[in-house]
Image (cartoon, rainbow, N blue to C red; front, side, top):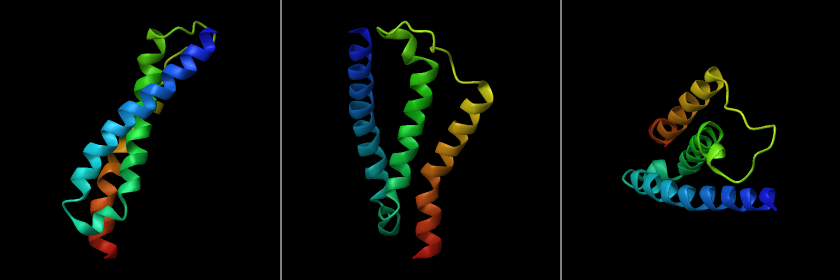
Length: 99
């Protein structure tokens, strides 16, 4: 039962926070029309950010207490954060270069 509750919590976190982050990023990309085509890269960046947040902080606040609970290694966390920042910036670069 705890596993089901944790799965439901993860889905709610990603849907609610992902929707909020996607709305914010989507409004930023609508400023420049060519960037709207590549706004899915920003949505992917938001999901990566929430994945890092969940694995490093939020998983320890839930109902699940299994053996597999541990933080991401620091190098992986930094790499994923850097990649998500690049994904957030990428629509502006691709929109100006390709259109």
